[in-house]
Length: 71
Image 1 (spheres, helix red, strand yellow):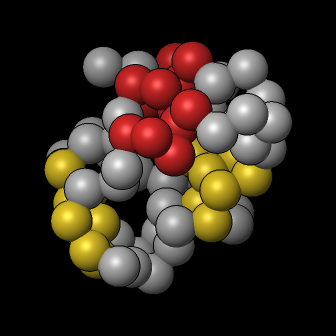
Image 2 (cartoon, one colour):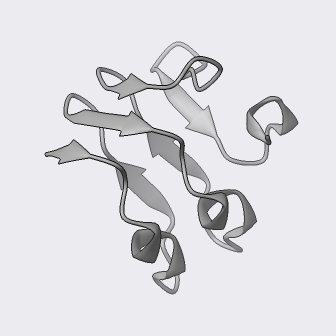
């Protein structure tokens, strides 16, 4: 998949884990993911996100609660 992450994905109820790794996504991660009440992990390795959007942790996981990713 390529392009930007569709913001509507961030409004899926009870979304807990989101695997978007090894695609061709670009741009920024929509704000809805940072505010999602259930989302715990979002796998983003292997994409072309804008500088400052880097996966963290041994498994290349973005922890949504980590304030380092809030713009």
